[in-house]
Image 1 (cartoon, protein in one colour):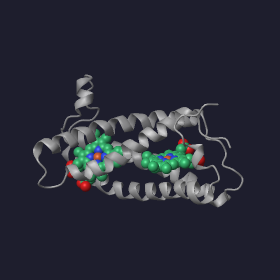
Image 2 (cartoon, helix red, strand yellow):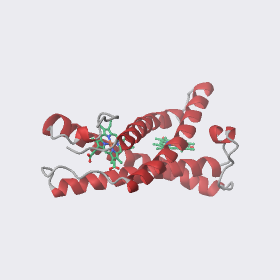
Image 3 (cartoon, rainbow, N blue to C red):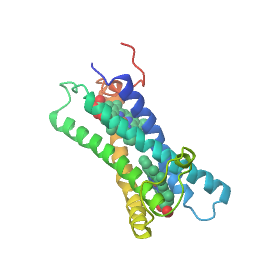
Image 4 (spheres, rainbow, N blue to C red):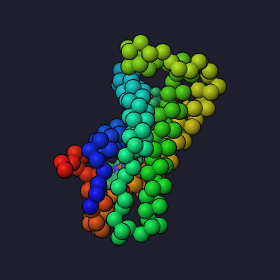
Length: 179
Ligand code: HEM
Ligand code: HEM
């Protein structure tokens, strides 16, 4: 069965791993009672990896428009295919939403993004505490929607792998294909 190409697969798995790491790191770093050094490290990881995710997602969207995914097998009912497509767009949208609200919260709140600073790249947005606060709230709640869609998506992928065994999982796995 036709699958995704190696570029799409590599981008999928790199972003998937990074996003799955960002969720617990984000929640841990804001816990009370964490020692300062650990907290700083987690914040630096979260902010900088978040920007990497944002850039990878933009590359990924561009790649997808140039290389549309192969059609699903006929055995997958049209309704299921529509739900899958919707979930995929929700994942693109929610990951971008989290990355953008995180970036706005940090830069408009007047905090540094160390990796960008090291490259000599200045914040794209001016300081504005009210907007930073709104972005913080959006970032806080957006996570629940993202976790929900990821659970649905991973559940569906594993259902195809273990129960249906119809090759849909192998459209994305392994991360590198030899043709
Ligand atoms: C896919 C990308 C991202 C995900 C999944 C994510 C996830 C999270 C989560 C789950 C939290 C914990 C929220 C809480 O419990 O209060 C959080 C907090 C935070 N995130 Fe992100 N994040 C992402 C991207 C970013 C980016 C790009 C930045 C900044 C450049 C960022 C900056 C922050 C900050 C500063 C907090 C602490 C919020 C506060 O001020 O209390 N995040 N993030
Ligand atoms: C370990 C967990 C994961 C597994 C097993 C998995 C599995 C898969 C599989 C098998 C596909 C191909 C579906 C098809 O053929 O139509 C796929 C597509 C996709 N996955 Fe995942 N995935 C995982 C995590 C994630 C995460 C965390 C995200 C979000 C950051 C994500 C975003 C996507 C998107 C957007 C697509 C559609 C790609 C496109 O058509 O452009 N996945 N995934």
